[in-house]
Length: 152
Length: 175
Image 1 (cartoon, each protein chain N blue to C red):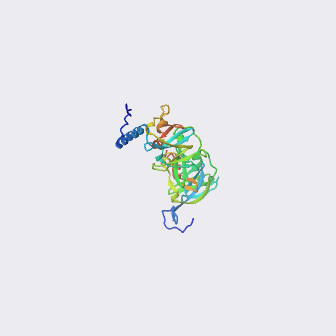
Image 2: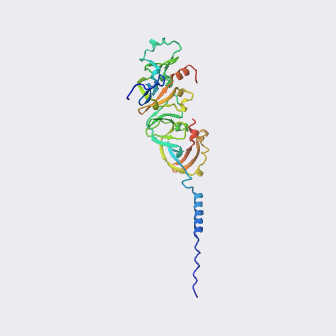
């Protein structure tokens, strides 16, 4: 993709390129599904098995969520992503990290209404296309809230 | 004695003939609706059963190549389909209608719909045919069908493949 430098800004997460606004997404696999987070919300990545070394850093308020386990009940042995949005943060264990993708905004679509309903399907707020594949933009805040009993 | 020829019937006037033809046409129409009065339906199969949806609510039929299942999605939602870059919600009609669960085969078909607020489609086994349905031939779903299943249909009609259930898509999508 040809990049001519930022021509305008849409906040901290979306950049304007010649081809249109794009957002950097970190793609990962979890629960047999291709998922993504805005790369700007991912602070760090820890190798598998390293949770013990850093588990105390975030204090008791930090959620540790194994995404595989959350959706399928099976524990993952993949890396941990440190996610943060404002005051909120969580560690997410994923199957494996695929890549960081510069995704055109026009390739994204809000999640259809039937997925936004209550329940675990509501953990996704948009979907996008990478080649032929559909990926899901996850909202870790929803996972953390549900884990903490704040949402049904 | 002169042989008398039977009198030839008086030729009917053009208006008489035309009026008679009009009446014949109307009788024929009453007996069999014209193509314009029939409603075209797309028929598709789930297992060996045939179902129909109004052609006016059909946007596109495509082979189901990539279906992204969504963790935690409601049971009646098969997942998301990428149709030439457009992300469409795919409904699992089989589950909604209470049929035996079965993974979508490689030969499964995606029927994209139109007329709904969001892009929607159905995953079906295969396409049967397009039928011109006379609305007068539509009957209520059989009393033997469970109420939940019957509620998904506007009625049934007999086609060569069997009894075709005509889907009530507005109700079906409110899963």
